[in-house]
Length: 233
Image 1 (tube, helix red, strand yellow):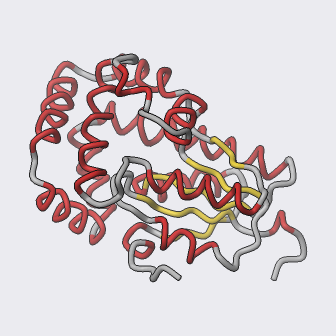
Image 2 (spheres, rainbow, N blue to C red; image 1 turned 90 degrees about the vertical axis):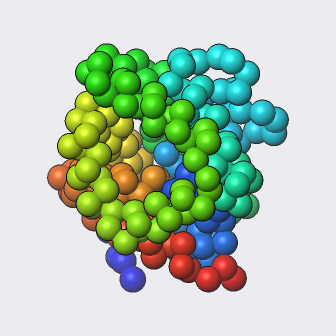
């Protein structure tokens, strides 16, 4: 299809971190030649998530926001059927190991991200973020499913609402990380990893694709709304 692997687009797969997408990810990548698989993880989160045992966030270490969101994600991951938050990252890592290709960790160090986040947020944003996390501890999973469905129908609208309500959060968690992940994917491409599939949170898809295009890297995207409907083979 392509005269060289460096002409192949980077495939961006949009995930929801509390939804089990192992079957759809495997089906989507089954017949696709790949030089590497990339995931939205850093070294610390990869060690916690991809090894057996309890994630580090549950051991009491790390910033308060990180620990609180870890509890929320583990709770929702269990109730929504994925068993553990980040199951899609585990699936991608397992697939890379089975194929004998590198697993690229393209995200920023989580502690640096949280530090930037806290420093950028207004007092109002901090209160809203903590309140939202507390609600996440008790909100019924059926409501979460409804919100996931609503997001899948209009992801851009959801992201735009996030930017309006939490401009500092959107800048740090989306815009800055999109640029940094795009830079790492572009570096991997220059190092010979042209055929790459990257599993990232769906809210990153549009911004990450734009950041890659600015670097001259072609992309192909499978949004969460489409990926979750792929039949597992």
